[in-house]
Length: 356
Image (cartoon, rainbow, N blue to C red; front, side, top):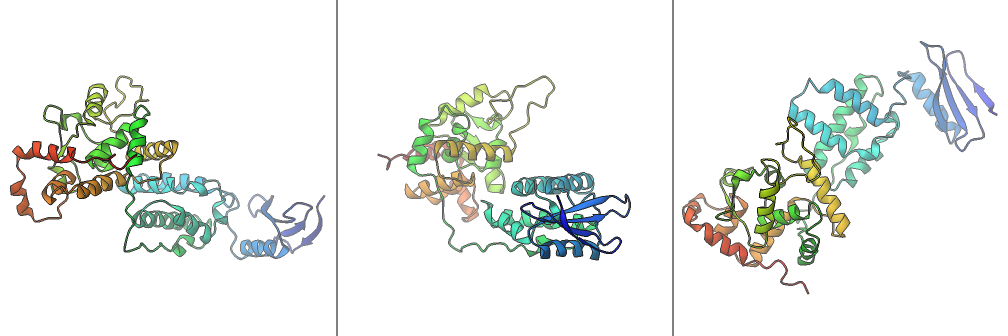
């Protein structure tokens, strides 16, 4: 039974001491419905008084003060969908997915240190963390407009400094051997293709079968740079059967496809795998195999590292990776007839040489 109730003046709320773990119960009267509404339970009377004073100083909508991060985002999403560019809206959705630990927390009660902890915990680049911070700031501005709170706590987030000397996290020979040993597991063959071709995630999931030349063993195209869009990627002999099998069995126009898809007529069956979905499966697969966590871009770094180790020349490296890091005159030295030379060079690499 509640006891030791501290009465305030009319409309000033009350603090009641209970026998619960957080004994101080704060309640106020809704000015519209005239009903008593709880502002929560607190460990100390001081905390309870601060909560009550905060409300009395700036009364807020009692219907929204208990809304979770997820519920606030759903309102925000509905308000923004037709008012911002598609790319911006998609960025909001992607950033929201990185905020999963906050989903079920009461939005008003999330403190700046919790937001900072979220950003610090993200396994992504500083650029992605900056995008996530920007999203949180926009979400808090929306909450302020909705009079859910009065301060933008996301503005206090500090982005971690990146080391000038970034650690290059590549797949080791042991990792690659483990992937080959588990080739029948879904998604493993896609990871191997990305390692052995150096394709970026966007290039891989959007690679159409029409750009795969099985006769000459060459993949054409890419993205990001002009050089990348016009490059030729040689298909190594060891992954040729994998690519050939995917080419034959993919029910879509794309080489990579989700084997769990069940296609129905008129069901947009020619859409590529979404990059975020691929990343999820990429991470799940590595975790299941006990391989150290990697970014999808580490596949590309792995090939670049091995090509350097096996002393492929700069022309060959830039042609395969699609970089523009050397003088454009070098383009004159890489002609169509050199496709077989590229294949010979890429096949010289022994990814498993140091594996016992």
